[in-house]
Length: 148
Image 1 (cartoon, rainbow, N blue to C red):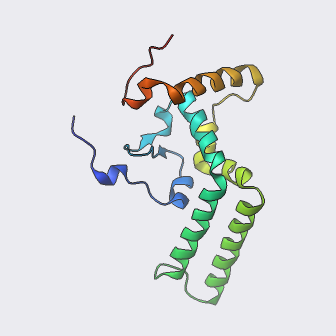
Image 2 (image 1 turned 135 degrees about the vertical axis):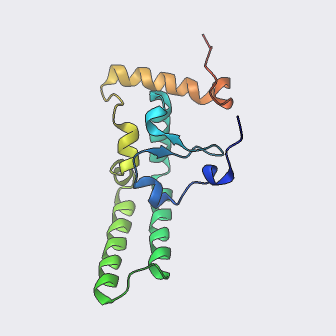
C-alpha cells in the first residue's frame, strides 16, 4: 500500500473543515470519513474540539478576514457591509460562547450525532475513550486494541 501524498494529509482552514460534515483530518494522517470513526474516536474528537473552541473560532475569524480582504473578497458597498456584519456576528458568537458556537458547527454535529447523551451510556463511552487515548494500539494505523 502506498503512502498518501502530502495533499491528502494537509487539512484545509478551520472555516472549511467545520462547514462540512463528512471528513476529519487527524494530525499527520490522511483524512478520514466521520462515518468510519468509531464512537470513542468521535467522542474524543468532540472533546478536543470543545477544549480548543476559542482558538479555532479565532482562527476562523481571521481566516474570514484574510479571505475578505483579498482578491476573492466581496466587492461593492452592500457586499462589504454584509461581509463585515457576518464577521462581527461570528466574532461575537466565538467570544461569548466558544463551546456553544463549536457545538453548532456542521462537523461537530456530525461527529456527535449518534453519541449517547444519557449518563449510563455516556459513562461507558467516556471510559472507553479515556483508555483509547493512551492505548498503544492507537499509535499504529488500523491496529486493534487487545488490552484486557
